[in-house]
Length: 304
Image 1: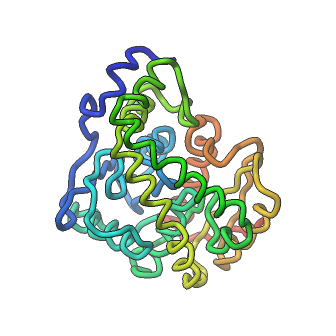
Image 2: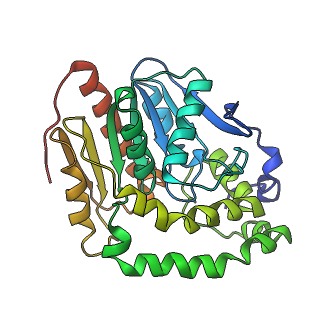
């Protein structure tokens, strides 16, 4: 348990580490580090926020410019009055980058459901995308192939309706003050404190629940996404705690491009690919490999 948890759970104690950028009616948080091209854009998993990339972003910044951001209503970003959709999220990311004067070409990295957003971005703006990295990525058909996932989402939505009022009463803060942890416990101290602070607010749970409520339609819309031709693609798969059939979905994603590489990180779980320093280091190395291949005009090697 890190020190000063009581202070850490007040989100106001943590100013945004990057810029707040107007995207039309509300502002999104964007934090870019490093230099050179292509620019790597990190899109987090469902319910995630920019500090989740604390182990990855500094490693990528050693090689090239890398940006993290918070989707509307998450962490430092302001909420949008529009419902969350697959296309809307991708277009809003494009507006954010444009208004912040962040130009492509981009390497888009999507973790879990983040892969659907980056694939939609590529479909809308193909000339701006130089490569894609999918990190234990969602498959558009996974809710259909794994009904238990859809049922689990609905159960969580039913249960979590009480979370925002509990957060208003300070129960979430008390949870952390008493040493409670979630799966982000291995993040660096600063980012752990930031995430714990946001987890303690009703606003976080409202945003998380809105994304989960939209998930069925997001996955349905993702079915229209096509193949990637020979666009450089790296698929990274967790090697442990996976559902039966998950590997086959990951192999299917690797076939989206004729210029792809598929790597499984042994011992890594779905969330640990970002939260665990050792697993995240391997993810960072593969993203860097993508950047270098693009710079040199080299092809990737397809592997299962």
